[in-house]
Length: 417
Image 1: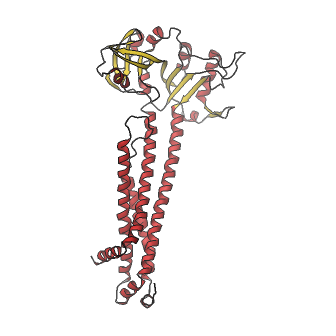
Image 2 (image 1 turned 135 degrees about the vertical axis):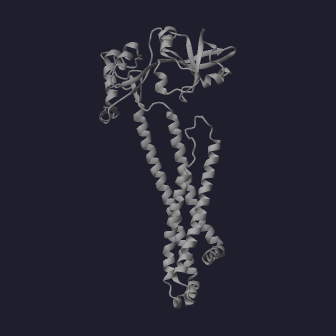
Image 3 (image 1 turned 45 degrees about the horizontal axis):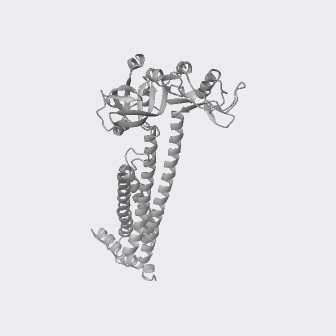
């Protein structure tokens, strides 16, 4: 108990110095927690943006030509037909496949309630590709597609705009035609807005009799060695073998230059996901380096303050050694003071940082458009960081403690501050 009372007495006599030292330690841990929380929030927001959609998804869309082809002018609008879709579907890499026919700003109504929606004509695999969760009822199936059924699945945004969640089994009008609601699913991506899904066959027979559409979604299975085989195009853009194959197949069918990226776009979710993960890894490394530098600066501050403490107490240590105090006692006193300051203020900084992140998390709108979600910090990780700081504090205290042990009593008694 003597050593502990001595440590506490030393800290109490030098409150301002202790407070400044503790602030440096607490600030280091606080900044580390804030940085970790911010990086977690950004990562979670990006992850939420991907949703539950399968990572090996590939989207193909038809656009406008930007290059002449066989005497045809540029800026020609292109569209897919069932013929191109069947060719793509037969590629050996393709697993799940769905045509997606879109009609924007389609009016639907239920009773006296109206909503403007994105109308999607989709095939059976669409739910599996996008992993659509069904809250009530069911999703579209192959029988609906075969029979050109006038059924639909609406998302939760549609139920909110139409004023009721009890729409399964009810009829709503899309344009002038009544559709039976067979299911309610989760909302799509933020950019999609309110969405209503109907069978592709029904969509093509009613809303697009020319059988034209501009979007295909599918999942692919590509061998790892083929994924690494990429080609840099004339414009400096890196293309995968699958992307090159798709454009080469569709080029003569749709009459566009196979190197024209505006004519037919191919987007691989897996490639985008890997690039994003690489960027997040770089951010996490940057945060870790900054956090460690902040912790080291706090530890250096502890070491400097302890050196000042030893210099101020030189005569005291000399007197204690002169009356028989063992060097071990002096060592434990200095190191103990360093540990107490580092641990106490380290945990104060840790809990302050965690508290700030929890408050920030409370004010982030759930399900909003902000790409920043759940910026909380793993307490275990921060506790480990704090323990590391305490160990560094021990090392920082050992240096001045060893110096104090080596003080000769006669030199200490003659020491002038």
